[in-house]
Length: 443
Ligand code: NDP
Image 1 (cartoon, rainbow, N blue to C red):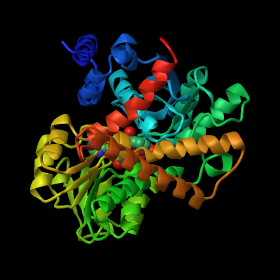
Image 2: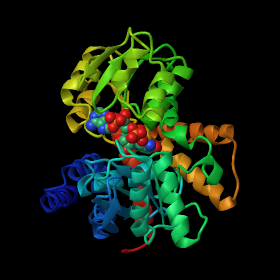
Image 3: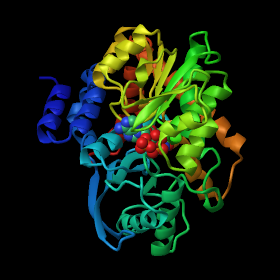
């Protein structure tokens, strides 16, 4: 049995209760087979066994009091996965579905994503099964303060720098930062995604969605095309989705969909972003409310967003939201480019269908790396006690996304797999991490 198969078998039997983690590890290791088979030094150094095991996983109780005076208890997580190329870096997800499997899958993906940015950041991820949806500001603050009261022991500007993710936006980062500062007395860049008045970076909020579109546009240009005039389907209505919609529209594309966990809208005239932002960021309401100001749009409860005819699909909501059937429908409708704004939104079967049918498919670890890249730029500014302008950071982001595309495209070509950007991304990311791990000895 090959080295990859043995490690995969061991992960599958040890972590039977962690399906998302197994899915992420399998996807990466499968595509690394030829690279790993070629280099016996990896096996000798137990590199894969070490790569799939987090350096540390912290699980903790988060007690807080709700507005009715009731004590609530949530579970907090921080998985510090791999620090071979820099301090752990990765977001905090606040959603009722969060469990160890999801945090480990996200942390594992993050190692590779962070490597692709070319910046010195390792991989980690965290969060809690607390859902800020429907909670008052005071309840969210009580939760965040309690969460940080445990987490602060394990993080720091040079050790582990968390950021936002699903459910963790500017409000949550503010409460978390305030509590960190109160507990440690340190005014340091320990979190990214901070408000502009206390060390945040211009462009960080926009970076994941903007970066996704920059990368897709670069890919199209490399294929003698561009995004202008294309019809784009976007899922989600959160941070990543809204900024992907905004940048795609700025570059002349027509975006016709958006969604939340209740359902999705199709607007044949093009999504009106101001309406989405009013519903999601101001009213914290449901996307069905979009029809009140845009009566020509259509709302559908539940799934089905990928049945819309489009040239480009950008899944920006959550993991496994795009199935093999969805992929077949998209392909049948003429979709030729898919870029993952979310982490692992396409199932493995959907990814195979895209690759088999010549769809240019960019996996999340490359396509959505703009957020963490801008976070690393925020860390640099904090260390230097400087603030760069929006245009400075935006230009750096654009460069980073173009570099990511060309690196993964070249790595795919080097493996003889032209345009297979899944292989390209995994191989390009792995080579840098593996080299650092080998150089640092058995740690
Ligand atoms: P947000 O919380 O801002 O938005 C998430 C959106 O997805 C919401 O509209 C939410 O709807 C929707 N959603 C959540 N679960 C489901 C579901 N099961 N079915 C359909 N829709 C769903 O999160 P982000 O935009 O920050 O994150 C989106 C994705 O992008 C995640 O996979 C995240 O890990 C990834 N990502 C985020 C980065 C960032 O910088 N924020 C960086 C890189 C990746 P509802 O309002 O109903 O919950």
